[in-house]
Amino acid sequence: MSTKASIWSLPCVPVDETLAPQALGLWNRLAGGTEIPHKTLNAASFSTLFLNDAGDVARIALAAVEDGRLLGFAAGNLKEGTRIGYLTFVMVEPEARRRGIGTALAGAVETELLAMAARQGAPLEFLDARFLNPSPLEWVVPGTVGHDHPNAPGVDMSGSGHLFMKNIGFRTIDTVNSYHRALEGFEYSPAIRDSLERLEREGLRIVVYRGDYHTGLVDLIDDLHSDVWRDTLLSNAAKPGGGLPVLIVEDGARVCGFAGPMDVQPSGRGYFNGIGIHSSYRSRGAGKALFSALCMGLKERGAKFMTLFTGETNPARNIYESAGFRIVRSWACM
Image (tube, rainbow, N blue to C red; front, side):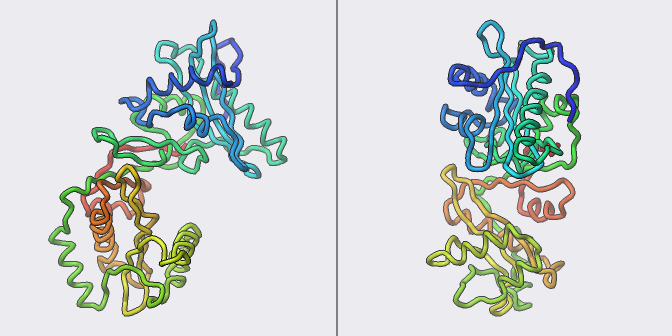
Protein backbone atom coordinates (compact mmCIF):
# COMPACT_ATOMS: atom_id res chain seq x y z
CA MET A 1 0.00 0.00 0.00
CA SER A 2 1.15 3.53 -0.70
CA THR A 3 -1.05 6.24 0.76
CA LYS A 4 -1.73 9.43 -1.14
CA ALA A 5 -0.51 12.82 0.03
CA SER A 6 -2.48 14.31 2.92
CA ILE A 7 -3.38 17.91 3.72
CA TRP A 8 -3.14 17.02 7.42
CA SER A 9 0.12 18.66 8.49
CA LEU A 10 0.28 17.84 12.21
CA PRO A 11 2.14 14.72 13.40
CA CYS A 12 0.32 11.51 14.30
CA VAL A 13 1.16 10.65 17.90
CA PRO A 14 0.88 7.41 19.93
CA VAL A 15 -2.38 6.80 21.76
CA ASP A 16 -1.17 6.97 25.36
CA GLU A 17 -3.04 6.84 28.68
CA THR A 18 -4.05 10.48 28.23
CA LEU A 19 -5.48 10.02 24.73
CA ALA A 20 -6.94 6.54 25.22
CA PRO A 21 -10.15 7.80 26.92
CA GLN A 22 -10.77 10.20 24.03
CA ALA A 23 -10.17 7.44 21.47
CA LEU A 24 -12.50 5.12 23.39
CA GLY A 25 -15.13 7.85 23.56
CA LEU A 26 -14.93 8.38 19.79
CA TRP A 27 -15.27 4.65 19.20
CA ASN A 28 -18.31 4.32 21.43
CA ARG A 29 -20.05 7.35 19.88
CA LEU A 30 -19.80 5.85 16.40
CA ALA A 31 -19.91 2.09 17.06
CA GLY A 32 -23.18 0.20 17.01
CA GLY A 33 -24.82 2.64 14.61
CA THR A 34 -25.75 2.44 10.96
CA GLU A 35 -22.23 3.35 9.77
CA ILE A 36 -20.16 1.15 12.09
CA PRO A 37 -21.79 -2.12 13.24
CA HIS A 38 -19.04 -3.03 15.72
CA LYS A 39 -19.72 -3.40 19.42
CA THR A 40 -19.04 -0.65 21.91
CA LEU A 41 -16.02 -1.25 24.16
CA ASN A 42 -14.84 -0.57 27.68
CA ALA A 43 -11.36 0.62 28.62
CA ALA A 44 -10.02 -2.91 29.05
CA SER A 45 -11.36 -4.30 25.77
CA PHE A 46 -10.23 -1.19 23.88
CA SER A 47 -6.69 -1.64 25.21
CA THR A 48 -6.72 -5.35 24.38
CA LEU A 49 -7.77 -4.75 20.79
CA PHE A 50 -5.75 -1.68 19.91
CA LEU A 51 -3.02 -0.87 22.44
CA ASN A 52 -1.51 -3.83 24.30
CA ASP A 53 0.97 -6.28 22.83
CA ALA A 54 0.02 -9.91 23.40
CA GLY A 55 2.45 -12.79 23.01
CA ASP A 56 3.89 -12.57 19.50
CA VAL A 57 1.49 -9.80 18.39
CA ALA A 58 2.73 -6.20 18.53
CA ARG A 59 0.10 -3.46 18.31
CA ILE A 60 0.34 0.19 17.32
CA ALA A 61 -2.28 2.93 17.73
CA LEU A 62 -1.77 6.52 16.56
CA ALA A 63 -3.92 9.62 16.99
CA ALA A 64 -4.49 12.89 15.19
CA VAL A 65 -4.69 15.66 17.81
CA GLU A 66 -5.50 19.34 17.35
CA ASP A 67 -5.49 21.80 20.27
CA GLY A 68 -5.57 18.90 22.72
CA ARG A 69 -8.58 17.26 21.09
CA LEU A 70 -8.37 13.84 19.45
CA LEU A 71 -9.87 14.03 15.97
CA GLY A 72 -9.19 10.46 14.94
CA PHE A 73 -7.11 7.37 15.53
CA ALA A 74 -5.85 4.35 13.61
CA ALA A 75 -4.60 0.99 14.85
CA GLY A 76 -2.67 -1.91 13.40
CA ASN A 77 -0.66 -4.92 14.43
CA LEU A 78 2.06 -7.29 13.34
CA LYS A 79 2.51 -10.92 14.27
CA GLU A 80 6.15 -11.75 14.90
CA GLY A 81 7.88 -13.61 12.10
CA THR A 82 5.24 -12.89 9.46
CA ARG A 83 5.46 -10.63 6.45
CA ILE A 84 1.88 -9.39 6.74
CA GLY A 85 0.79 -6.38 8.77
CA TYR A 86 -2.81 -5.53 9.59
CA LEU A 87 -4.58 -2.20 9.52
CA THR A 88 -7.23 -2.91 12.13
CA PHE A 89 -9.23 0.30 12.00
CA VAL A 90 -9.21 3.98 11.05
CA MET A 91 -11.76 6.25 12.72
CA VAL A 92 -12.19 10.04 12.33
CA GLU A 93 -14.68 12.43 13.92
CA PRO A 94 -17.43 13.05 11.32
CA GLU A 95 -16.97 16.85 11.36
CA ALA A 96 -13.19 16.46 10.87
CA ARG A 97 -13.36 14.31 7.76
CA ARG A 98 -12.16 15.31 4.27
CA ARG A 99 -9.09 16.97 5.75
CA GLY A 100 -6.76 14.06 5.01
CA ILE A 101 -6.67 12.94 8.65
CA GLY A 102 -7.63 9.31 7.95
CA THR A 103 -5.13 9.08 5.11
CA ALA A 104 -2.37 10.48 7.31
CA LEU A 105 -3.21 8.09 10.14
CA ALA A 106 -3.24 5.04 7.87
CA GLY A 107 0.06 6.08 6.34
CA ALA A 108 1.63 6.61 9.77
CA VAL A 109 0.50 3.17 10.95
CA GLU A 110 1.94 1.66 7.78
CA THR A 111 5.27 3.40 8.39
CA GLU A 112 5.39 2.08 11.97
CA LEU A 113 4.54 -1.47 10.87
CA LEU A 114 7.26 -1.36 8.21
CA ALA A 115 9.79 -0.31 10.84
CA MET A 116 8.62 -2.98 13.30
CA ALA A 117 8.89 -5.70 10.65
CA ALA A 118 12.35 -4.52 9.60
CA ARG A 119 13.55 -4.73 13.21
CA GLN A 120 12.28 -8.32 13.34
CA GLY A 121 14.19 -9.18 10.17
CA ALA A 122 11.08 -10.05 8.16
CA PRO A 123 10.38 -7.10 5.80
CA LEU A 124 6.69 -6.34 5.38
CA GLU A 125 5.18 -7.48 2.08
CA PHE A 126 1.45 -6.87 2.58
CA LEU A 127 -0.86 -4.69 4.62
CA ASP A 128 -4.16 -6.47 5.13
CA ALA A 129 -7.67 -5.71 6.34
CA ARG A 130 -9.45 -9.04 6.69
CA PHE A 131 -10.65 -11.70 9.13
CA LEU A 132 -7.19 -13.16 9.88
CA ASN A 133 -6.40 -10.01 11.87
CA PRO A 134 -5.13 -10.89 15.38
CA SER A 135 -7.33 -8.05 16.69
CA PRO A 136 -10.87 -9.41 16.05
CA LEU A 137 -13.68 -6.85 16.02
CA GLU A 138 -17.05 -8.06 17.30
CA TRP A 139 -20.20 -6.68 15.67
CA VAL A 140 -23.97 -6.83 16.07
CA VAL A 141 -26.42 -7.97 13.40
CA PRO A 142 -28.50 -4.98 12.23
CA GLY A 143 -32.08 -4.98 13.50
CA THR A 144 -31.44 -7.44 16.33
CA VAL A 145 -30.92 -7.12 20.07
CA GLY A 146 -27.53 -8.57 20.90
CA HIS A 147 -27.26 -11.05 18.03
CA ASP A 148 -23.52 -10.81 17.62
CA HIS A 149 -20.58 -12.28 15.74
CA PRO A 150 -17.08 -12.53 17.25
CA ASN A 151 -15.14 -11.29 14.22
CA ALA A 152 -15.61 -8.94 11.30
CA PRO A 153 -14.13 -10.72 8.26
CA GLY A 154 -13.01 -7.57 6.44
CA VAL A 155 -14.17 -4.03 5.71
CA ASP A 156 -17.91 -3.37 5.88
CA MET A 157 -18.97 -2.76 2.28
CA SER A 158 -22.02 -0.72 3.28
CA GLY A 159 -20.01 1.86 5.23
CA SER A 160 -17.84 4.78 4.20
CA GLY A 161 -14.71 2.88 5.23
CA HIS A 162 -14.85 0.71 2.12
CA LEU A 163 -14.45 3.64 -0.27
CA PHE A 164 -11.82 5.18 2.02
CA MET A 165 -9.73 2.01 1.92
CA LYS A 166 -9.91 1.86 -1.86
CA ASN A 167 -8.87 5.50 -2.10
CA ILE A 168 -5.74 4.93 -0.01
CA GLY A 169 -4.53 2.04 -2.15
CA PHE A 170 -6.14 -1.14 -0.84
CA ARG A 171 -7.71 -3.55 -3.32
CA THR A 172 -10.38 -6.17 -2.72
CA ILE A 173 -9.18 -9.76 -3.00
CA ASP A 174 -12.38 -11.46 -1.84
CA THR A 175 -15.94 -10.71 -0.74
CA VAL A 176 -17.30 -12.43 2.35
CA ASN A 177 -20.98 -12.57 3.33
CA SER A 178 -22.21 -12.83 6.91
CA TYR A 179 -25.31 -14.96 7.42
CA HIS A 180 -27.80 -14.88 10.31
CA ARG A 181 -30.80 -16.87 11.46
CA ALA A 182 -32.91 -16.69 14.60
CA LEU A 183 -33.49 -20.22 15.91
CA GLU A 184 -36.81 -19.58 17.60
CA GLY A 185 -39.33 -21.64 15.70
CA PHE A 186 -36.68 -23.47 13.66
CA GLU A 187 -38.01 -26.74 12.28
CA TYR A 188 -36.93 -29.14 9.58
CA SER A 189 -38.34 -28.20 6.20
CA PRO A 190 -40.31 -30.87 4.30
CA ALA A 191 -37.38 -31.23 1.87
CA ILE A 192 -34.94 -31.85 4.74
CA ARG A 193 -37.28 -34.38 6.35
CA ASP A 194 -37.42 -36.22 3.03
CA SER A 195 -33.61 -36.13 2.79
CA LEU A 196 -33.18 -37.50 6.31
CA GLU A 197 -35.56 -40.37 5.55
CA ARG A 198 -33.86 -41.14 2.22
CA LEU A 199 -30.39 -41.05 3.74
CA GLU A 200 -31.47 -43.45 6.47
CA ARG A 201 -32.83 -45.85 3.85
CA GLU A 202 -29.38 -45.69 2.28
CA GLY A 203 -27.78 -46.59 5.61
CA LEU A 204 -26.66 -43.05 6.56
CA ARG A 205 -27.73 -41.54 9.88
CA ILE A 206 -26.96 -38.27 11.63
CA VAL A 207 -25.89 -38.89 15.23
CA VAL A 208 -23.55 -37.51 17.88
CA TYR A 209 -19.96 -38.71 17.50
CA ARG A 210 -18.77 -41.37 19.96
CA GLY A 211 -15.03 -41.89 20.19
CA ASP A 212 -15.48 -45.37 21.67
CA TYR A 213 -17.52 -46.55 18.70
CA HIS A 214 -17.01 -44.53 15.55
CA THR A 215 -14.04 -44.92 13.22
CA GLY A 216 -12.65 -42.97 10.29
CA LEU A 217 -12.48 -39.48 11.82
CA VAL A 218 -8.86 -39.00 10.77
CA ASP A 219 -9.63 -40.32 7.28
CA LEU A 220 -12.45 -37.76 6.98
CA ILE A 221 -10.14 -34.93 8.09
CA ASP A 222 -7.47 -36.06 5.60
CA ASP A 223 -10.09 -36.04 2.84
CA LEU A 224 -11.21 -32.49 3.77
CA HIS A 225 -7.62 -31.13 3.75
CA SER A 226 -8.09 -28.76 6.70
CA ASP A 227 -5.42 -28.37 9.37
CA VAL A 228 -7.79 -26.13 11.35
CA TRP A 229 -10.45 -28.84 11.50
CA ARG A 230 -7.79 -31.44 12.27
CA ASP A 231 -6.62 -29.52 15.32
CA THR A 232 -10.15 -28.65 16.46
CA LEU A 233 -11.76 -32.07 16.05
CA LEU A 234 -8.91 -34.17 17.39
CA SER A 235 -8.22 -31.94 20.39
CA ASN A 236 -11.95 -31.85 21.18
CA ALA A 237 -12.26 -35.64 20.93
CA ALA A 238 -9.29 -36.06 23.30
CA LYS A 239 -10.97 -34.07 26.09
CA PRO A 240 -12.54 -35.86 29.07
CA GLY A 241 -15.98 -37.10 28.13
CA GLY A 242 -15.26 -36.53 24.46
CA GLY A 243 -15.44 -32.73 24.61
CA LEU A 244 -18.22 -30.69 23.04
CA PRO A 245 -20.77 -32.67 21.00
CA VAL A 246 -20.05 -33.16 17.29
CA LEU A 247 -22.75 -34.27 14.87
CA ILE A 248 -21.66 -36.76 12.22
CA VAL A 249 -23.06 -38.60 9.26
CA GLU A 250 -22.39 -42.26 10.01
CA ASP A 251 -22.27 -45.18 7.62
CA GLY A 252 -22.31 -48.02 10.09
CA ALA A 253 -19.47 -47.05 12.43
CA ARG A 254 -17.67 -44.99 9.79
CA VAL A 255 -17.63 -41.21 10.05
CA CYS A 256 -18.38 -39.71 6.63
CA GLY A 257 -19.31 -36.13 7.59
CA PHE A 258 -19.18 -33.79 10.57
CA ALA A 259 -20.69 -30.56 11.90
CA GLY A 260 -19.45 -28.94 15.10
CA PRO A 261 -18.19 -28.98 17.75
CA MET A 262 -21.37 -27.40 19.10
CA ASP A 263 -21.54 -24.82 21.86
CA VAL A 264 -23.80 -22.00 23.03
CA GLN A 265 -22.05 -18.70 23.75
CA PRO A 266 -23.12 -16.26 26.50
CA SER A 267 -24.97 -14.03 24.01
CA GLY A 268 -27.11 -16.99 22.95
CA ARG A 269 -25.17 -17.50 19.74
CA GLY A 270 -24.96 -21.08 18.53
CA TYR A 271 -21.33 -21.85 17.74
CA PHE A 272 -19.81 -24.49 15.50
CA ASN A 273 -16.33 -24.70 14.06
CA GLY A 274 -17.11 -26.22 10.68
CA ILE A 275 -19.03 -28.65 8.50
CA GLY A 276 -17.70 -31.09 5.95
CA ILE A 277 -18.73 -34.20 4.01
CA HIS A 278 -16.32 -36.87 2.79
CA SER A 279 -15.84 -36.63 -0.97
CA SER A 280 -17.20 -40.16 -1.41
CA TYR A 281 -20.54 -39.14 0.10
CA ARG A 282 -21.25 -35.81 -1.57
CA SER A 283 -24.08 -34.92 -3.95
CA ARG A 284 -26.53 -36.97 -1.90
CA GLY A 285 -28.05 -34.16 0.16
CA ALA A 286 -26.10 -35.08 3.28
CA GLY A 287 -24.59 -31.60 3.71
CA LYS A 288 -27.93 -29.78 3.83
CA ALA A 289 -29.46 -32.41 6.09
CA LEU A 290 -26.47 -32.32 8.44
CA PHE A 291 -26.52 -28.53 8.67
CA SER A 292 -30.23 -28.46 9.49
CA ALA A 293 -29.58 -31.10 12.15
CA LEU A 294 -26.82 -28.87 13.53
CA CYS A 295 -29.23 -25.93 13.77
CA MET A 296 -31.79 -28.14 15.53
CA GLY A 297 -29.16 -29.47 17.90
CA LEU A 298 -27.99 -25.96 18.85
CA LYS A 299 -31.59 -24.81 19.33
CA GLU A 300 -32.23 -27.77 21.66
CA ARG A 301 -29.12 -26.77 23.64
CA GLY A 302 -30.51 -23.27 24.18
CA ALA A 303 -29.04 -21.26 21.30
CA LYS A 304 -31.19 -18.29 20.26
CA PHE A 305 -29.51 -17.51 16.93
CA MET A 306 -26.60 -18.37 14.66
CA THR A 307 -24.21 -16.24 12.64
CA LEU A 308 -21.52 -17.38 10.23
CA PHE A 309 -19.65 -16.13 7.19
CA THR A 310 -18.54 -17.60 3.91
CA GLY A 311 -17.03 -16.42 0.63
CA GLU A 312 -19.28 -14.92 -2.03
CA THR A 313 -18.50 -17.79 -4.44
CA ASN A 314 -18.36 -20.62 -1.88
CA PRO A 315 -20.90 -23.32 -2.83
CA ALA A 316 -21.48 -23.89 0.91
CA ARG A 317 -23.76 -20.84 0.86
CA ASN A 318 -26.40 -23.08 -0.72
CA ILE A 319 -26.35 -25.22 2.43
CA TYR A 320 -26.86 -22.22 4.71
CA GLU A 321 -29.57 -20.66 2.57
CA SER A 322 -31.46 -23.97 2.47
CA ALA A 323 -31.83 -23.68 6.27
CA GLY A 324 -33.27 -20.16 6.07
CA PHE A 325 -30.08 -18.17 6.66
CA ARG A 326 -29.93 -14.75 5.02
CA ILE A 327 -27.08 -12.36 4.25
CA VAL A 328 -27.01 -9.48 6.75
CA ARG A 329 -23.61 -7.94 5.94
CA SER A 330 -21.01 -8.11 3.18
CA TRP A 331 -17.33 -7.51 3.80
CA ALA A 332 -14.34 -6.83 1.57
CA CYS A 333 -11.12 -8.67 2.33
CA MET A 334 -8.60 -6.07 1.20
